Amino acid sequence: AVYDVTDKDMWFQQTVRVDFTEKAKVEMTPTTATQYLEDGSSYTFTCTFTGYPVKKLEITGANSLPITCPRSDADIVCSISGKVYTVRVLAFDESKEGSYDCTMETEFINPVTSISSSSNEVKSIQLQYVKPSTTVLSVNKDIIQKGSSFTLTCVVEGYPQPEIPTLRKG
Image 1 (cartoon, rainbow, N blue to C red):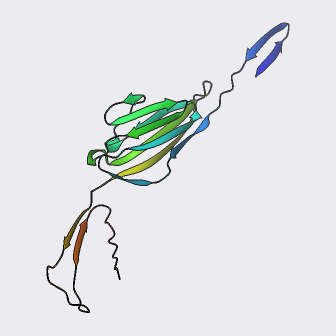
Image 2 (image 1 turned 180 degrees about the vertical axis):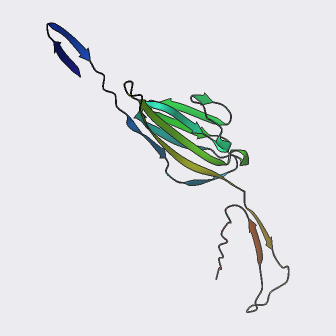
Image 3 (image 1 turned 60 degrees about the vertical axis):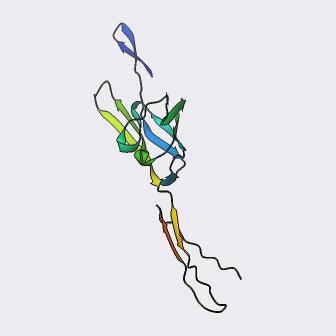
């Protein structure tokens, strides 16, 4: 805004800058809160940041370790396009299990009053390691007569706990 001020015969012009703060907003896709991943698999998520002025913009991985962007190594690839950060976790294993967070904070400090206004938002996804399932099936080597009953023992392990479908033919 521009203001004209007159004082007797003096004339001067003052320019006033009007700043604004746009609330921090983070969108994370996919929006699933927990994702179960098998050993060696990869997973991609994106963080879209909007808000102004930016005080803090951060992506953290397992054990709250910061993920720098751009980055490309054997563990993580991160790329930036505008305010969209794409993170790909490679060769997933138990060491990469945990919370992956996208954090943004905006802050504006009024130059005249020194009063600040800020906002903060965090979105997270939990990546869980899936222990490969194992199955043990115990089969009797007995000959079963038609019409008699028998027991099959089946033990499965894994995380999350696998379901055991039972099928009967005939």
